[in-house]
Image (cartoon, rainbow, N blue to C red; front, side, top):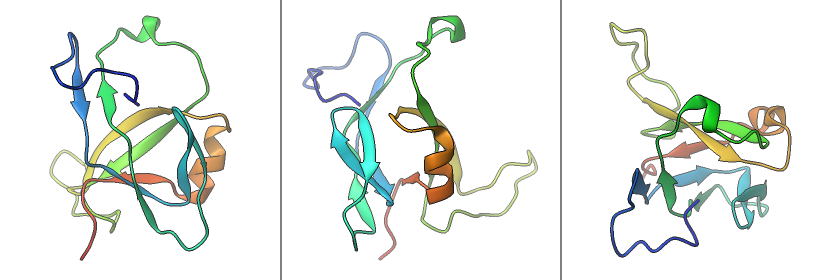
Length: 116
């Protein structure tokens, strides 16, 4: 998450991503870490993220969650000829202080748009 970055100009490397939504059960507890959500809250806005290309060997080995990003909250789509869902966008590597399975069992995902 790019809370401490100067977003008034483009980053030297990568891109800033803003406007995603967290499909609860998670909220942002403190800088760069997910936490359990507030009861009865279904969606929350995701802070700005800086996507930065890196070599696999240069990625730090901190606890992470490979969070799926979907276009809509349906979490399903038609399989294309490449074998990928038309609703799936990407898996994002997000920092977490809990094991990955904790968020998998809760169904944590990011969305590009909310349903009206």
